[in-house]
Length: 178
Image (cartoon, rainbow, N blue to C red; front, side):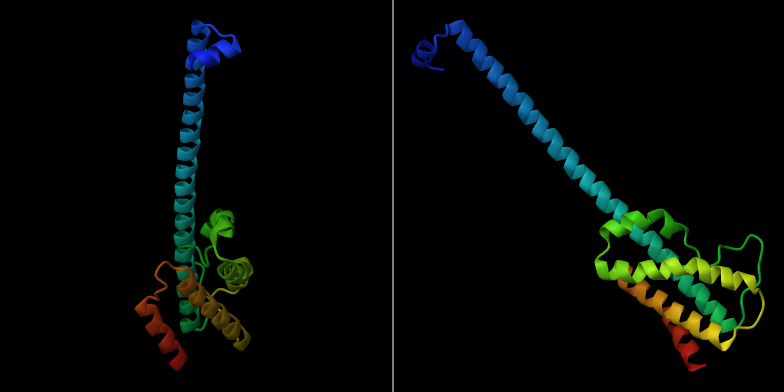
C-alpha cells in the first residue's frame, strides 16, 4: 500500500504492513480452499465414472448369463432340474446392487430397455423353478424366446464393445434353424 493511501486512510506503516500480511493470508486461504474443492470434485467425478463403468460391466455379465441360461433351457426344451450348488438361475444380484448407479449413468434408451427386462426376471425365475424337468409348452417357448432375444439385444447395446460372443451367435442361429 502506498504511503499516500496509508495517510488518507489514517494508517501507520505498522498497520499497513499488518493489513498487507492479513490480506496475503486470506488470499492464501481462499486459494487453498479453491484448489482443495477443485481437486475433490475432480477425483469424485473420476470415482463416479469408475463406479458407473463397473456397474455397467457387472450387469452386462449378468445379462450374458441370463441370455446363455435362457438359450440352454430353450435348447433342452424343458425347464432345468434343481441342482444343489449350481450357479443361480437367471441371476439379478448385480442388477439389484447397481441399479441406482445405472439409473444415474445409462442413457434413457438403454435404461428404458434394461429396467423392464431385469424387473421381469424374478417372476420368470419363479415360474421356471416351479416346474423343474417338465417340458416347455408353446407359450413357454414363445415367452422365453422373446426374453432371450431382448437379453441378447441389451447385451449388445450395453456392453462396452457392443460385440456378441461368436459362439453365442452361432448357438442362436442353430436354435433358429431347428
